Length: 298
Image (cartoon, rainbow, N blue to C red; front, side, top):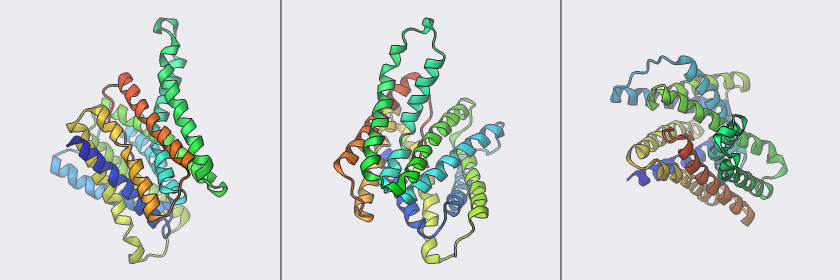
């Protein structure tokens, strides 16, 4: 069952991407982030009450920092989804595992001393990072047009931001904060960021026909997060973590069927290399941090 829960979570995240792409035709990123947050807050507050989890925290600054980083990554991801093929935007965001591996390698090299053994022991992690970056080059060169390069850069930044946010989630987990509380405060942060975005970019003309895409974004993200949590509670962490990459497959199918995106062979090869490097990074990271929490892509 743990595999089914994770595959379902990945499908919901990919479906959320579809809703974002349709909503982006009529609403600016600030509005989409705002409604993602509003629905998420309502859903998570109700869920926290059902589970009897208090939302009072002793670590407000840590939650604030996690929300700032997470909202920045989320906004960058939404922008990339709106301006790139869905499969490309999803893949760039799912590179967070590769970025985390890069951070681990950098940190280990900076703090290395002869007493810690040969630095060549980090060779597998280095190769994983290089494979992921090679995949990005292969995927972006043939699939991203010149006028989409800025969106591609933003997509890459969303993956970096997700990696930083994940490391903050690790710190909150070590401090004893339940995931429900962390996700709820993150949703509050998206509401605030959305309001700031709307204050800057303005508010689009309201249409019930177009606004139908806004509510599912928050609902799908919240339900997918709960499915992911359920998967991690039932099955082996490594198996479940690697199944998250099925979301890229779903996104590719949606890109082909709903939006008519066509990726050349080199683009598919690059996407495959990123998936392989992400899986390898997850396995190697589990050895370095065996009790780390799940990554988030919402």
